[in-house]
Amino acid sequence: MAGRKAEGGGRTAIDAERLTSRLPTFAVRVIRMSDSLLKGPASHVIAHQIIRSACSIGANYREAQRARTRAEFASKANVALQECDETGWWLSVISEAELIPAKRLSELSTEQDELTAILTAITRTAKRG
Image 1 (cartoon, rainbow, N blue to C red):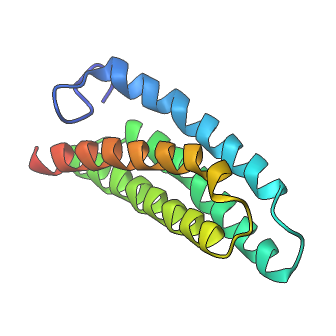
Image 2 (cartoon, one colour; image 1 turned 180 degrees about the vertical axis):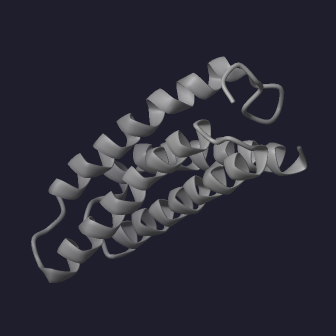
């Protein structure tokens, strides 16, 4: 599927490459943030869940890029979108529980919102195909 328009809104494969580089960076930032959570059983579970979902975004998008059909691409891109949405939910829980100050979470939340918007556009475009 390389070389074709991979995202909505007139974005080209070059934009898809930028997304591909943003996703591991986002996952690493979530991992580092999780390491600073307060220690305790609830924090441990939350850290595990957010790391899993944040890392899964990039893994599923990578699978989407290797898809053999448009339907397979749309399916994998949609899974990446769902994982991105879940990551946003865990960021909200962390903020609400005051496990990390909201100010420290704002950049991660902004990045998660941007990734969600990009993946939403990708998924919509792929499903229209």
